[in-house]
Image (cartoon, rainbow, N blue to C red; front, side, top):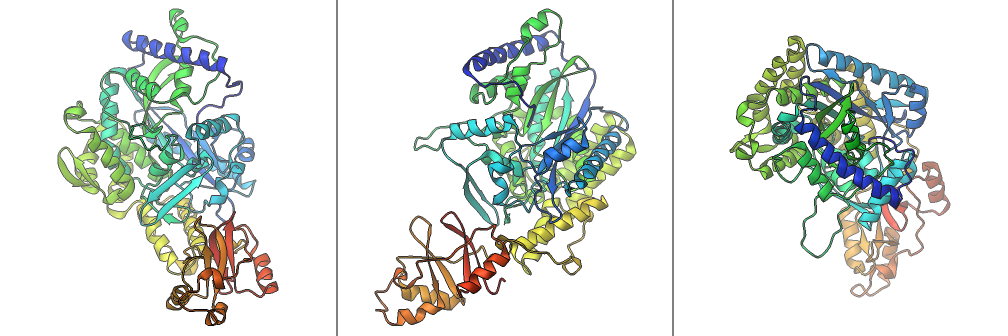
Amino acid sequence: MGEHIQESIFNEQERKAFVQHLIDDIQALEQMIDQGMIEDDIVRIGAEQEMCLINPDYRPAPKSLDIIKTVDDPHFTTELASYNVEANLDPYTLEKDCFTSMENQLRELVEKVTKAASKHDTRILLTGILPTISKDELGMDYMTPIPRYYRINSILKTWRGDDFTVRIKGADELSLHHDSVLFEACNTSFQLHLQIPPQDFIKSYNWAQAISGPVLGVCCNSPLLLGKELWRETRIALFQQSLDTRIWTKALREEVARVGFGQRWQQKSVAETFKQDISTHRILLTKPIKKNALEQLQKGETPKLEALSLFNSTVYRWNRPCYGVGNGKPHLRIENRYIPAGPTVLDEMANFAFWVGLMAGRPKKYDDMPSLMDFRTAKLNFLRAATSGRHAMFSWMGKAMTAKKIVREELLPIAYKGLRKFNIDEKDILRLLGVIEERTKGGTGAEWQINNFRELRKQMKLDSAIVQLTRSMYKNQQTGKPVHQWRPIDKMSETKESFEWVSQIMSTKLMKLYEDDYANLALAIMQWNNIHHLPVENGRGELVGLLTWSHIEKFEQLDKKEARVSDIMVKDVISVKPKTKIEEAKEMMEKHKIGCLPICVDTHIVGIISKVDL
């Protein structure tokens, strides 16, 4: 989530000064590019690893501040949610054993934070979306208590003017309102950085956009959210919708989403890209800035372009252009933000080597992407990859091709050449790109999750299935084997899960009645489906009653054609919340001599438990 702003007061005076710094930063960047001041004689790689914190029950553990304090290492920082942490890796020159060096550091950092987490009864898991995240962990009490995060949430909510809405359709459908940006915290990624010479930036950036679809297709690892099977890489839809401030109106108008793929091919320089973003997105954060970039240039100093960097950190392109200063020298880089975390460190490093190899090995014929591919085609390929993963069908240079075919026949040969061009150790090239080759045949992390989730759901309730799935992901991760070698979950060998809350055992696929439904139809539905109790809602979706088999006798005394559900239902319904202890629910059912308990959030029913569930 970028830098922490300690001194900002976010007032109008600070904003006015920030705007001028932002304009000056763009002018300073253009001067540096024109004068050849941007570093162009070396290529470096870097990465950011986001991680999930889970408790012994494989559910989110909000312990990030405690763990970061224990680990006491500047490589680690917080994330938006208190059950995530991030490790920032050191940059490495793209040469020889750089991937082995980076992999070793990544493993050391994961091991270091694992040891620190164990002191807080917490474990580390690498995955695009943690399957066991529930609606409970998306409230403000799980936001890391840092001013920057609260500020982002407050401003985006104000701009939106309403709750945020998430609507994603896959095999299942998720549709709900939420009152904070914390839905974004469900996403955990492995962000890749590649330094690009300024004279090649636009060609490289457009190429990065063109290959995004096929690359994502073989890297998917985020198919589940809140127990729903959605896209193969659900992060793509979720991230855009969780930070979407566009206001729905009756007028037909176009607004650029703050999270997205972009609107067109880039044509001039990286400065033009930054100008586009400043022109189409409001300033979200400000901070006091002491040094003026243009004045620094006149003094022969290298400016950090602080205003531009802060603004850029709040515009979430999937391929994000970045400016930075390292060893006193300014540089440009592309940040690849669409790769999910996990399933293992080896899988992530294979993804990294594949992308870097593709970027480094770009054939000359792809220097002018606008003449070869319509931008909308590249954008559509990206969305197809997110929804269908390895099985997506793409349009590639005018031909219809599967993701697997593009990767094997078109892209892997380019990646091999690109890595060899920078004299990467041959054993690393074969080892890492070999993982990508095998994954195109054996399946992605998303496919492994979906296949096992479906099998588990045949035998157990939703909560048990996602816990079993997460447990198995954690165990497989410890082996270090790449995901295409993971075996199906052996249900018989898994330990029995302990249940505490009614939300863990409730039925969530509910048949419901409405109070104005005719009673004879309601009872027929109960008989046809062998259901002993049905919740009753009003027109606003609020729980207003309950109909059970015991009401048949009451129905017999009424006019069968005229009676409504509201005439025979129980109106004084006893209900509980999702975080009610199972033992407490059991006692309530025994005390009131009832066979079921609706589970409600406010006035809306989200599940039901019966004696059978208990």
